[in-house]
Image (tube, rainbow, N blue to C red):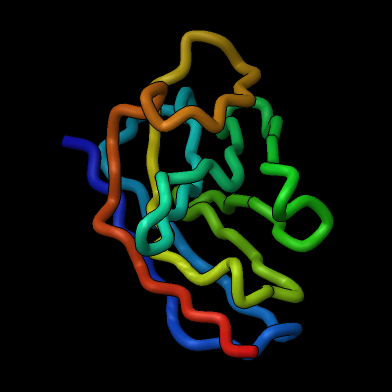
Length: 126
């Protein structure tokens, strides 16, 4: 059974930094992708970034390009490094995963993902 557990959320000042973690279990091989989504109150869920664990390909929403970085390690943990966050980045951040049938993956569409974590709150103060 695949499980995703997020951690690292909290309160951060605008211009600071925060690192979110997504610990994945239940995958036998690295044939999956991980994405970060976020949802602010009253807004639709938005894809933030994704990474293929197979070939390392990544994608970012325009709103976070140059500020956020997605990367992983050998322990099946995927991180979202949030640098220079802005108040508009305040949201519940979710980790999601999907099994891959190709190495490269660039989707930030929530309906492409099968497995979801419970979410972690990120609040950016001005």
